[in-house]
Image (cartoon, rainbow, N blue to C red):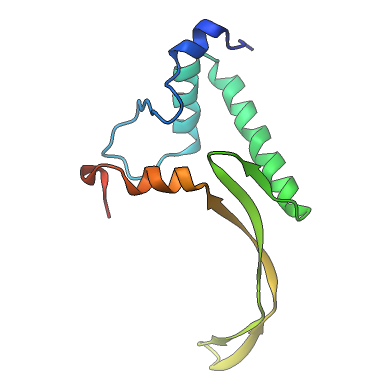
Amino acid sequence: MKRLTSSDKDALPERGKTLSLRPLSRKRMTKAELVNLISKKTGVERSAVLVTLEAFMEEVKGSLAQGEPVHMRGFGSFVVKRRAQKTGRNLSKNTTIIIPAHDVPAFKPADSFVEQVKNRDDKSHGA
C-alpha cells in the first residue's frame, strides 16, 4: 500500500476547497464511485482504498452497536438516537399495534459541513 508523501499531500486540495472528479449530473454516489475517486485523488490502489473504507464502516458500525458515538471534526458525528414507544396501525388487519422503543443510527453533520451544503451553486440542486 502506498503511503502519502509530502508531495502527494501538496496535490490534495486545501482544507475547505473541494476537487471533484465526478460529474454534477449524478444524483447520488455509490461506494464503488467513492473508492474510485479517492484512489484517483490519492494515487492509492483501489483495493487498498476499498479495504480502508470497509474497515472504517465496520468500526463505525461496531462503535454504534456498543452505544458509542463517533465524532469526526469538520465532518460530523455518527450517533445512536433513541426512538420512543409509539402506536401504529396494521392497515391490512385494521388493528392497532405498539411499536416498542428502539435505537437507530443517525448522522449529525458538522456546522461547516452544513454551511458548505447550504451555499452550493443553484445549478447543482436537483430533485
